[in-house]
Length: 155
Image (cartoon, rainbow, N blue to C red; front, top):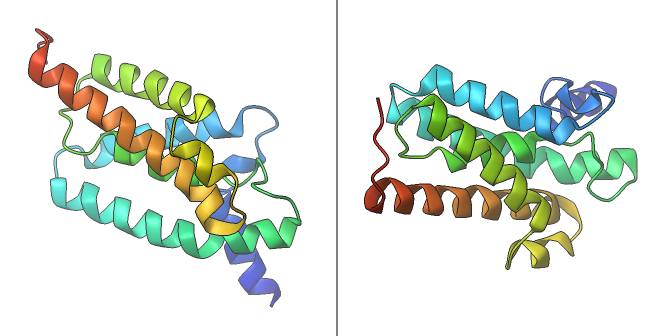
Protein backbone atom coordinates (compact mmCIF):
# COMPACT_ATOMS: atom_id res chain seq x y z
CA UNK A 1 0.00 0.00 0.00
CA UNK A 2 2.87 2.41 0.71
CA UNK A 3 4.31 2.13 -2.81
CA UNK A 4 0.84 2.70 -4.27
CA UNK A 5 0.39 5.80 -2.08
CA UNK A 6 3.83 7.07 -3.09
CA UNK A 7 2.92 6.63 -6.76
CA UNK A 8 -0.40 8.45 -6.23
CA UNK A 9 1.34 11.31 -4.41
CA UNK A 10 4.07 11.55 -7.05
CA UNK A 11 1.66 11.67 -9.96
CA UNK A 12 -1.00 13.87 -8.35
CA UNK A 13 1.63 16.45 -7.32
CA UNK A 14 3.10 16.09 -10.81
CA UNK A 15 6.47 14.89 -9.64
CA UNK A 16 6.43 17.09 -6.53
CA UNK A 17 5.64 20.42 -8.24
CA UNK A 18 2.58 20.52 -5.97
CA UNK A 19 4.82 20.64 -2.91
CA UNK A 20 6.23 24.05 -3.84
CA UNK A 21 5.57 26.39 -0.90
CA UNK A 22 3.56 28.99 -2.82
CA UNK A 23 1.31 29.05 -5.92
CA UNK A 24 1.82 25.37 -6.83
CA UNK A 25 -1.06 25.53 -9.34
CA UNK A 26 0.62 28.34 -11.22
CA UNK A 27 3.91 26.45 -11.33
CA UNK A 28 2.06 23.35 -12.53
CA UNK A 29 0.51 25.44 -15.32
CA UNK A 30 4.03 26.55 -16.29
CA UNK A 31 5.05 22.88 -16.40
CA UNK A 32 2.07 22.22 -18.68
CA UNK A 33 3.21 25.02 -20.99
CA UNK A 34 6.75 23.62 -21.01
CA UNK A 35 5.43 20.16 -21.86
CA UNK A 36 3.51 21.70 -24.75
CA UNK A 37 6.74 23.29 -25.96
CA UNK A 38 8.36 19.83 -25.98
CA UNK A 39 5.58 18.24 -28.07
CA UNK A 40 4.52 21.27 -30.14
CA UNK A 41 5.72 19.73 -33.41
CA UNK A 42 3.52 16.64 -33.09
CA UNK A 43 -0.26 16.74 -32.76
CA UNK A 44 -0.12 12.99 -32.08
CA UNK A 45 2.33 13.38 -29.18
CA UNK A 46 0.38 16.33 -27.78
CA UNK A 47 -2.93 14.43 -27.97
CA UNK A 48 -1.40 11.31 -26.47
CA UNK A 49 0.13 13.33 -23.62
CA UNK A 50 -3.24 14.96 -22.88
CA UNK A 51 -5.02 11.59 -22.88
CA UNK A 52 -2.43 9.97 -20.63
CA UNK A 53 -2.50 12.88 -18.17
CA UNK A 54 -6.29 13.01 -18.10
CA UNK A 55 -6.52 9.28 -17.44
CA UNK A 56 -3.81 9.46 -14.77
CA UNK A 57 -5.38 12.59 -13.31
CA UNK A 58 -8.78 10.96 -12.94
CA UNK A 59 -7.16 7.83 -11.51
CA UNK A 60 -4.94 9.52 -8.91
CA UNK A 61 -6.56 12.80 -7.90
CA UNK A 62 -9.51 11.35 -5.99
CA UNK A 63 -7.23 8.83 -4.30
CA UNK A 64 -4.80 11.62 -3.38
CA UNK A 65 -7.66 13.63 -1.91
CA UNK A 66 -8.44 10.67 0.35
CA UNK A 67 -4.77 10.18 1.29
CA UNK A 68 -4.43 13.83 2.41
CA UNK A 69 -7.99 13.84 3.75
CA UNK A 70 -8.55 17.31 2.22
CA UNK A 71 -10.95 18.26 -0.56
CA UNK A 72 -8.96 19.34 -3.63
CA UNK A 73 -5.70 19.72 -1.68
CA UNK A 74 -3.52 22.47 -3.17
CA UNK A 75 -0.65 20.03 -3.66
CA UNK A 76 -2.72 18.07 -6.21
CA UNK A 77 -1.70 19.78 -9.46
CA UNK A 78 -2.02 17.16 -12.21
CA UNK A 79 -5.31 18.90 -13.04
CA UNK A 80 -3.55 22.19 -13.83
CA UNK A 81 -0.98 20.44 -16.03
CA UNK A 82 -3.76 18.65 -17.92
CA UNK A 83 -5.87 21.78 -18.27
CA UNK A 84 -2.96 23.82 -19.55
CA UNK A 85 -2.19 21.19 -22.19
CA UNK A 86 -5.85 21.21 -23.26
CA UNK A 87 -5.62 24.99 -23.64
CA UNK A 88 -2.90 24.50 -26.27
CA UNK A 89 -4.70 21.84 -28.35
CA UNK A 90 -4.46 22.71 -32.07
CA UNK A 91 -2.85 26.07 -31.25
CA UNK A 92 0.32 27.02 -33.16
CA UNK A 93 3.34 27.63 -30.99
CA UNK A 94 4.22 31.27 -30.58
CA UNK A 95 5.64 32.70 -27.35
CA UNK A 96 3.06 35.50 -27.39
CA UNK A 97 0.19 33.04 -27.76
CA UNK A 98 1.70 30.84 -25.07
CA UNK A 99 1.83 33.77 -22.65
CA UNK A 100 -1.76 34.76 -23.45
CA UNK A 101 -2.88 31.14 -23.03
CA UNK A 102 -1.14 30.86 -19.68
CA UNK A 103 -2.66 34.08 -18.33
CA UNK A 104 -6.11 33.31 -19.69
CA UNK A 105 -6.03 29.77 -18.29
CA UNK A 106 -5.00 31.00 -14.83
CA UNK A 107 -7.76 33.65 -14.86
CA UNK A 108 -10.42 31.16 -15.95
CA UNK A 109 -9.17 28.59 -13.45
CA UNK A 110 -9.53 31.19 -10.68
CA UNK A 111 -12.90 32.58 -11.82
CA UNK A 112 -14.44 29.15 -12.47
CA UNK A 113 -17.05 30.16 -15.08
CA UNK A 114 -20.02 27.86 -15.60
CA UNK A 115 -19.90 24.84 -15.53
CA UNK A 116 -16.49 24.83 -13.79
CA UNK A 117 -18.12 26.20 -10.64
CA UNK A 118 -20.45 23.18 -10.60
CA UNK A 119 -17.54 20.72 -10.77
CA UNK A 120 -15.97 22.44 -7.78
CA UNK A 121 -18.86 21.16 -5.66
CA UNK A 122 -18.03 17.51 -6.32
CA UNK A 123 -15.52 15.61 -4.25
CA UNK A 124 -13.01 13.21 -5.74
CA UNK A 125 -11.54 13.19 -9.22
CA UNK A 126 -14.51 14.89 -10.93
CA UNK A 127 -14.30 17.86 -8.56
CA UNK A 128 -10.54 18.15 -8.90
CA UNK A 129 -10.15 17.61 -12.64
CA UNK A 130 -13.44 19.06 -13.92
CA UNK A 131 -12.88 22.77 -13.33
CA UNK A 132 -9.41 22.69 -14.90
CA UNK A 133 -10.69 20.80 -17.92
CA UNK A 134 -13.36 23.48 -18.38
CA UNK A 135 -10.77 26.27 -17.95
CA UNK A 136 -8.50 24.58 -20.51
CA UNK A 137 -11.33 24.10 -23.01
CA UNK A 138 -12.57 27.69 -22.58
CA UNK A 139 -9.02 28.99 -23.01
CA UNK A 140 -8.66 26.93 -26.17
CA UNK A 141 -11.98 28.13 -27.61
CA UNK A 142 -11.07 31.77 -26.96
CA UNK A 143 -7.63 31.32 -28.53
CA UNK A 144 -9.12 29.54 -31.56
CA UNK A 145 -11.55 32.41 -32.09
CA UNK A 146 -8.87 35.07 -31.67
CA UNK A 147 -6.51 33.29 -34.06
CA UNK A 148 -9.21 32.81 -36.67
CA UNK A 149 -10.93 36.18 -36.56
CA UNK A 150 -8.33 38.66 -35.32
CA UNK A 151 -5.37 39.99 -37.23
CA UNK A 152 -2.95 38.23 -34.89
CA UNK A 153 -0.03 36.91 -36.94
CA UNK A 154 2.12 34.05 -35.70
CA UNK A 155 5.79 34.01 -36.53
